[in-house]
Image (cartoon, rainbow, N blue to C red):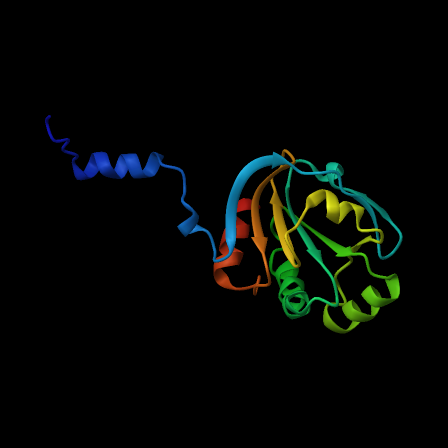
Length: 171
């Protein structure tokens, strides 16, 4: 058997053609097996209807949370900052509160992130369809409606690694 010899230029070409690995993703963000995003039709805190399908053609940051969830409470201010830092990107932020009253959501966000407008999953059926393995849970849905990435648990979304990654998607 002959040994295979690769030149540095051949190796660099192979590396360039190899899909990105999970180690290049920000901490806690994982690439998942592509699957269509479940239906997401809810009203926001202002009573306006929202349908995820209406925003096809752009990336969606779909985030499930609750005010009673400690990690959710801790990370919400960073999501508020993130939305302001990425106003120039084509990413839509979809924040789904799971099974809480309007009063609870309004009171919590009024203190922590007053500019965010969440969707209310009062009966928890949308959350159930998405099947997060706990809260908070974030899914990144591509412009064609396919879930490509997931992040479970809280994080500081406005940190440089996350900002760079999300900017690369929203170009």
